[in-house]
Length: 196
Image (cartoon, rainbow, N blue to C red; front, side, top):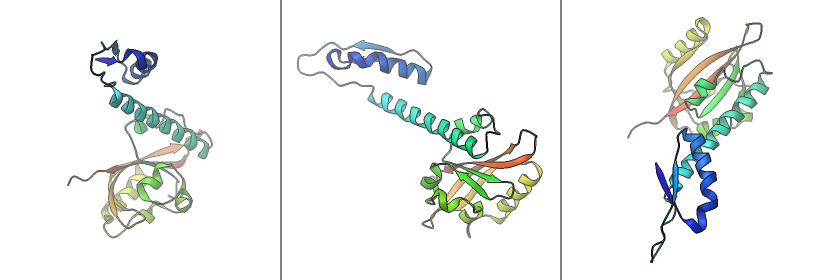
């Protein structure tokens, strides 16, 4: 892939953009200087690439920040790589509960997805996000799976603070102490976009 840049303006940026893009995409990109035309010089055509890379860097930073904050919340009993496979697939919110399902910590994305603040959520059970359209069978399956396998994966209809419903893909994983005692559950939640 080759990107053309303006000599007089973007020459200094080319090296930085190339290193950043190669780091993120894991492939070599070429940057060539444009020849000046008589009437006009077209702007850099890779701004979209730069913007996508910026978004990717912000997402990676948010994941690292969430892992750091989560680890502080559970007193460093989790290896950073333990949930990174789940988190790298993408998520909108993280919810940490104790074994009785009481919320201990939520990520910054929780408010964006649900409309509820961290302070409101902490101390409650995730049941406050459920309502009439939430399947009783799914709720029962969550309880059974967590009691027997300590994990659950599935979709659930939840309610935002404004009463609007949304489909939430939930992946619940257990977190054990260093003595292999079950201490916490981590719900990795992603909103499922509904097709029109």
